[in-house]
Length: 571
Picture 1 (cartoon, rainbow, N blue to C red):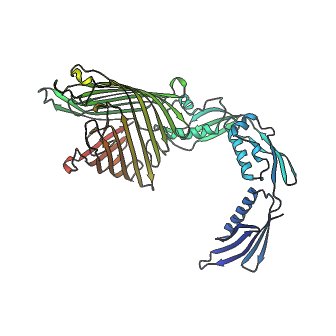
Picture 2: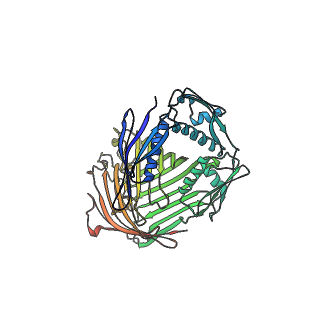
Picture 3: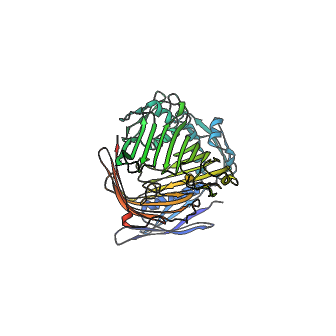
């Protein structure tokens, strides 16, 4: 029995601003849920509404509805839609579709048997088949229905697949001024000569270039096909992000009575060395005679032609005359689809006492100890940033977990009794992560926010085990590495006003929760507020930040405010 869709009483009303309004009351006979009154703003909306009704009928199996329009008076219209026969699938055959494409596309033709004929479902099957084809060297493939028969409103058909010519990659062409090594870039993007064309690789390559901080686009990428080969043209330039900056001070060595004490800071960052994606970093700080830190790292991408990156890093921290810690780490990284990066790492941490403050009669174990901690872990990074070097919108997430055995070393300068009830070997683990989000309002206003946290667990934690926080990169308004914590969480909020591409004024607020159970300190809730600016110059960036911070260990006072400023030269 045929269903009749009837639309009654379409009233055309003219508003004071002469904009036409259409009112439609419609119903599908026998279907109470399809009765409604619709207000449409124009003839275009009327056409869109009718198109939507036809699409709904097609999905329900009514393939050849008939529309009739009958004017009623000067300002009304009567619509009648006769649905016609309701069609069902009898069978959908595979035809000449290759089995490999059938499996990879996830096509199951049995799902069509004895179901309403639905254009949308059939379109999804076609799309999945073509997606597989364009990623396996056949970007010009096509698919359609063949051998179509109809009997008693039941349709039978088979798929007809035309692969088109096989297309392979020819080469990458860098049309910009970048001096990046083409072989490295080809391997990095997994677009190598003679390999099958893949649209997925093309899309991934454009995203991956955005994730390389030392490259920037100078135009729109292009793709050309010639002689059954595809060539990708990349208009990219090198970006000046290599940096060197530092401060050196010469002070009288008052403790030794003669000579000079060298203090200061030095930072060197080199990216894309020799055009092969190699990155090197060096950071050194010394602000008094007994405390200094050193960090060095080197990244070698695509080790020995594989898809693995290898990074080695070493850090050293000498804290007054109390302890010395060393940290060696080896990371193996693998790039995944969608801006994800997976890391496996092995790490060795070593802590040593430099001075014993406890007297021989004090049998309490000191807060600082000698230990060796060998651990293994996993890290995962996920980026949604629009620009990894200077983002204005998007997000970045980082997670890291490690576990291993910690060995406490017996220090002969301590009484032997302090080790009697102590487990010298135990399991230790830690977790840390961060999520930063950039909000973009318009060309001038934006907001940077970051939530960071971490914890570590072991029955015999030492002070020289703990996380170090405070300073310009964590909680502003405090000296560098001011806080010790076995677990922490802090939030940075920073509204920005941009007056140039990479220059802005900002205000900020930092709040945190820190716990240090090793030194039996109460839970601390440090906070900081301040303002500053970042100014791009011809060959670098000048930064200035004024901050006030308060905590259990520092009053919120103007005489304890901190000024962070510096110039970073880029080349």
